[in-house]
Image (cartoon, rainbow, N blue to C red; front, side):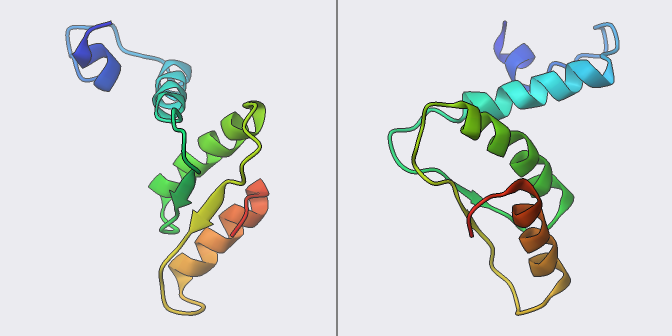
Length: 98
């Protein structure tokens, strides 16, 4: 892999188009690559699509690891705001810790 392949394999128009599964696997691999840490993990959820997709891929990878530290999630917002409620719903759906 080159730096370009690792960062955005779909960015080179001269490459054969990638399938949805290839893009999903590249994203999952990118999330997993950033799970190397000797300190506790945390995930900031904005309630938007992007942070929910990261949470969707991160939580199962984290559970499959041998790490027994809790995975905490954090959200900032006004009480009962739509983003805060979406983030809370995502954590509950995935069984994370708030």
